[in-house]
Image (cartoon, rainbow, N blue to C red; front, side):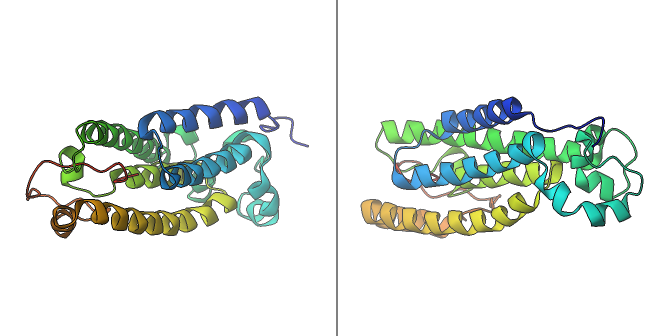
Length: 224
């Protein structure tokens, strides 16, 4: 066994998973079943990620033969070897300083910022019983879903695992289905006002150069 075995650190699995899940929870404040499903999918991804990052390196074991051929003489069970993209692209320095790792940190931070600014707009709209169409909601209908996906994409650049790589496209589909259900509920409540907003603002791709018609309204479902 490697003398620098970087796993079986289950305390770190629990602490890191709890920190990221609680952080996300504080920004989205789930209220409905759909909200909890969205947060639940994100939480499952985070637990799976940190389980392999600090607990048991399942991906490293399953790919050990192939990785051994690609990286002869490498210490696969050293914790830094879990940064597979850096290893496979030939990065020789500290994996934490590689362009991919830096980009991953940017994406993770951007995702949490998006969750935070989305919640600020949504909370104010809920309080005033309005449709949320200002701030980030003037550019995106589902900024909180996009925030979750951006965070997960960042982690995939930083520490890819077979399980999280499989989970990510599944969660994309789950979020797309959840947003369709939410939109039907919101349109039933706000009618033409929401229908007009939906025609002007895309769900996950920001549209710049134009504003939505009207700046009032609210939905307890929109975004998350």
